[in-house]
Length: 72
Image 1 (tube, rainbow, N blue to C red):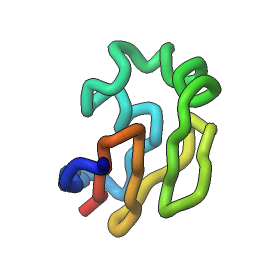
Image 2: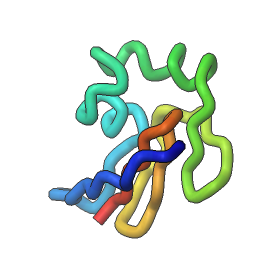
Image 3: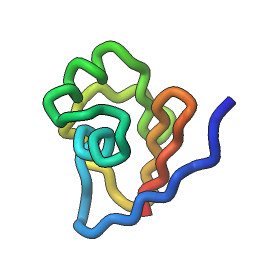
Image 4: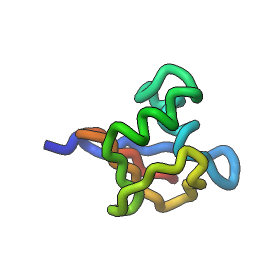
């Protein structure tokens, strides 16, 4: 079951997927992003995403396992 969506407030124009995963504690270091995205299902706006450099902007929704993050 999907948990309630966590709201992520942007301080800049965008955040990369790898940085979001690190900032939210999904991974411990940015270097783990490439491996994590290869081994785990991550959806951005309902589509599978495996690029750690994917730019996330206001309105994007990221789902990792049972966690959901909404970019504001």
